Every structure is written in C-alpha cells, then in structure tokens.
Image (cartoon, rainbow, N blue to C red; front, side, top):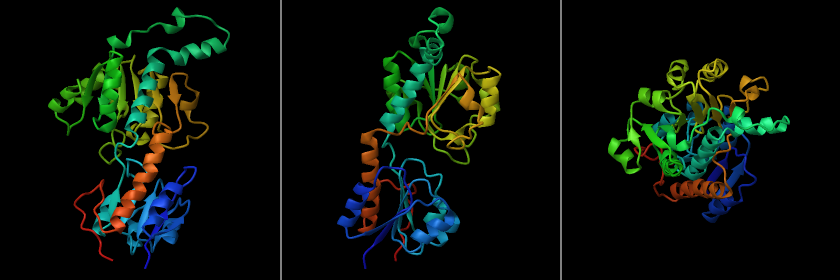
Length: 326
C-alpha cells in the first residue's frame, strides 16, 4: 500500500519540488489550503505524513490522525503544532532550523541601517518637497558608537553578529542557555536581560514563541529601554505585547520599531502601527529569498520521505519520540 502525504497549506507559487521528492518514493500527494481543524481532519485523517505551514495541528487534530508518522513544518517555529500531543502518539514533528538565517540577519540589518541613517525620516521629507539635512537627521550618531542587543542567540543571531560588527556596532546578547564563552567566540558579550534593555540602541528579538516567551517585551520591559532605542522583531509577533508597544511609541518612550511580524497578520486596517512614521512594517517577509524558499521546500519533503522509508528525521523538534508503528 502506497504512503499518502498531505500538504495542508502553503502560500508558495507551487509545490513541484515537494511532489517530485515524494512521488519518487512512491507516495501519493494530496493538497489543500486548510485553515480550520475540521479541514485538516478531512484532508489528513488517514495520511502517513503531513507538510504544513500555518494550518492548526492541535491536540484534537492529533487524535484524528490515525496513521500519521511525521509532520514537517515549512519554517523554524512550530507554534501552530501541538508537539507534545504529537509525541504522545509517536508522531515525529520536524522543522527546518536555520534555513533562512542569512535572510533574517540581512533583514534585521536593513532595519538597523534604515533607522540608524534616518531613512524613515529623510525619504518622506524629500517627498514633501523639502531638502533639509541636519534638521531631519539630528540626532544621529555613527553606528560604531552604538550598541545592538540580541535577545536570543541561535542561528539568526550568529549570522547577524559578524554583519553588525562589520558596521562597528558593539554587540551584547541575552540567552539563558548559551554560555558567555560561546558568545565570546562571536565577539559578543553576554549580559542580563535588564542590562541589555538598558544599554542597547537597537533591541533585536531572535526567539521562538512559547508560553515563556509570549509578551516577553511588555510594558515594563519597554520602559527599561532607552527613549532613543529601536525595537526590531523578525521572529514572532506575539513576543511583543503590541498594545504596550503602541502606547510606548505614542508616548515617545522608545524611538521606533522595525516589525516584520505582528500579533495578528495581516494587521487590521485601523491598527495604529500603520499610521506611525517611526514604525517600519514588512509583511512577514524576512525569511524570503529565492534560495531560502527552494531549500525549505526541498528540506520538508526530504524529512517526510526519510521517515516514511523507516529512517530517523534529521531535525526532530522532540528527539525523544518513540516512533509510531502502523
């Protein structure tokens, strides 16, 4: 009996790469654009493997996946998947760590340069018919005089560090599970979160979303930042309490924010962030390059193929899973 794989959803131009890899091992492929639990159950209740982007794979859904042995997610975060419920049923959950680390680092650096060189103020002034420099630029300091604080020190932060150092930025970081010695190898100084918020001119988030990290940047932590500092988030929108951020921006308690991710995507048209001149918004695009997308699509299909052929996945989220035998 041939294995069946469901691609629950994706917003990519096509899935030719995935289908080629899976049909090569004799698997049948189903495709959908699932947005609800019921749609997932209808499409994938009897499949052997799943590829998913945003569709909900909750504990209730896991109970209805009678044959599934592997779930591979397009991306790094797995907050739409109940990993513990999958593990209870012997289902591997895989992600693709580091697939877009270079792109995320570049996007973060673009935010830093945009704010650091006041592009967000200069461009609108020219479009208004002005031709003013000092009045628009002030206050501006050389990046080499400023500090970048990284919250989290995984793949992306480690790609970002040497790029930011090339601009002269001093880099500090907070990551409880990374040693000071490891950070020192990248020329980065480990500090407490309180010290990072107090010292940084740019605070950049590089964390997965979890119960512990949800709203990590709340009203209290925003008050700990310099009034001249910028918050940058290319990780997960819910790391930041968006209402508290809006209030801090309105009151001038921080200088601005560069956001590739939001708590609700896309934002409501009346979201105040859309009207703020000191906010740069991009549409969850920091992961993207032609190269990263091609690798991502190939990698998820290869993970599913490995498991369906009796092998262990390369990037299990929970490596202690006892695989289901069907």
